[in-house]
Image 1 (cartoon, one colour):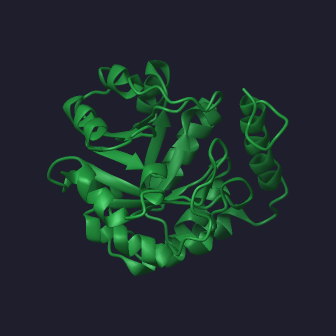
Image 2 (spheres, rainbow, N blue to C red):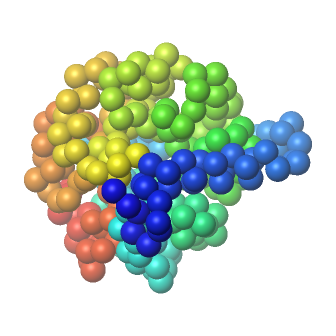
Length: 266
């Protein structure tokens, strides 16, 4: 399957995204110790996991997403302040903001602006490949960081998860199958996402989260990611034991984000 607008396979495109971030990280000469020290002095975080658990019914993590590698432009000219306010008005519990600029059109400025406009906690949605990325998330104002199991080895996953905790950040550990869930649990993850989109084919399997739910033990906050098209999908995922759904494309393209979030919450 070819990526829209690029003469490469989607798998190769994903590899290129990760390589891009790893090359940038390798060229980053900033002192990690100084970054950690600065991060520890950052303003208090808002509890991301706590906000989900405090929500009656299924929580909505509403995403600010300008474009997608698989769908192209979604809402490139969106105003993060306006969209964040609409999400909050609809009853979203948390917000996700894409900060990958080259591939998703996001930025740290989007995150800062969106978070300043609302009271809910925010996850930095990006490819975390270096310990400095976690510090950057804290310094730009994020309350949670995304760790993608398939993009990290076990040592990285453990180190990144530990640093996030040290800096006061929640970590949403993203998985795609039972083996990845096992790896997430091995580092002590208590906030686990199941992404229904295969990161190499970019195809969505609407039944993936329901299948994988059985491998998630009690005490773990469960987040279903991707492929949530509306209230019917949200109901199925809630019945499978998910505490939250992370929704982006269907919200930013809805024309009425407040109403779309409210419908999911119903």
